[in-house]
Length: 118
Image (cartoon, rainbow, N blue to C red; front, side):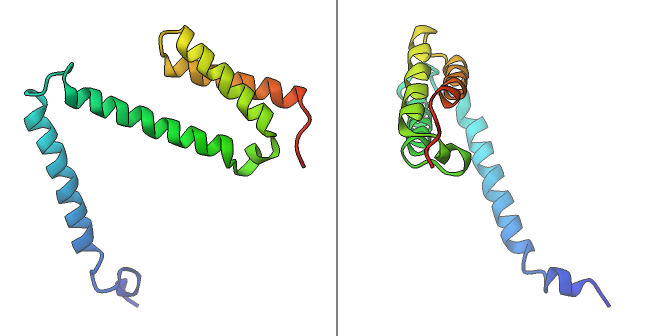
C-alpha cells in the first residue's frame, strides 16, 4: 500500500504554496514600507485603533453572549469584573495587562461571592 491514499493526488501542495507566497509577500511588503512609515502618523494610529476595536468586540461578545464555564456566571458578575478591569485600565495609564489582571481577579472574586446562574 502506498502513501497516496493519505495525501490524495498532491492537491494540497498548490494551496499551501499559494498561502506561503501570500504570507511572505505581505511580510516583505511590511519590511519594505516599514522604514518609511512615521510611527506617530495616521497609519500607526489607525492600526492601534483597529487592535483596540477588535479586543473590545471580543470582550463585549464574551460579556453579553458567554459560552462554556463563563455562561454559568450571571451578567452582574461579568459586568462587575468588566467595570473593575476598565477602572484599573484607566488608572494605570491604559495598561491592557493590568486591566486584564484586574478583570480576571474581579471575575474570580465576584463569582465566589455571587451565586451562579443555573
